[in-house]
Length: 296
Image (tube, rainbow, N blue to C red; front, side, top):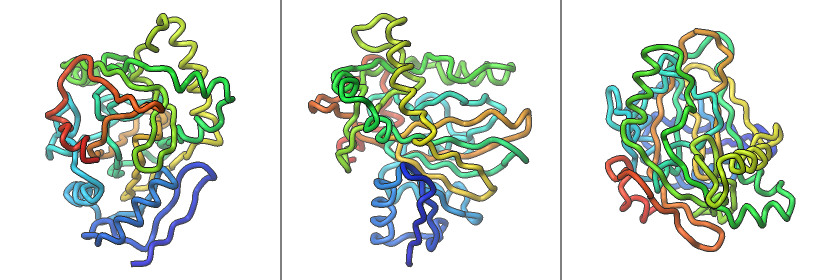
């Protein structure tokens, strides 16, 4: 296979052609895709033949799979989470499942039902955000730690079904202590590891934490750091969950929008001084075993 990789923006995103992601991939192709993901942070494939089993098979090229979610079970397959607008619209900036001690390394999203307008997904490079910080802010960020939790209103409730989904989402409480700046385990890049699951900055009041997070988050969401992907049916978006944030835009009224998510188990985040994240509340080993984290 001859991969063709075309950048979409300066800081994040590339379209990949020359590979059929619905088929089994050889080791060299997987290695090239991993290198491309490390460089571009997010990759987009046209994959009209891809189904749930194929999505799982593709994601497994990059490591062990997590189950669908720590609290939300897979509907039809244990490793597949249905991202359905009927359950709520996640129009807040976040990194997937940072409330556990070893969040997913890689997330894959497959488009199934796409609205006739709107419904784009934004992916932001937290590495570009970190690099753009003034030196004084960068040094301060390097020293900070944050508490992440799933008890957070990042999905706005508008119906009984959405309320039921939230009840399941929060059925087990998780809290984890993560560094505000995380070192990528493969590239050594530093990125701001924050987002909507952050409850509080350690050592600061809630009010102070909100102000500090707003300051750092403004660098993550600078337009220059963002890929805005307009979906078509039968596409696969793959992004490095360790060094990005994402946001599902709620600009499609009440049209149906459905994706499926499969995630690759990740390592335990490490700070700039080598300290590892710490689970404070909740056991997520059923979701992403720590053995996978140690091997990642």
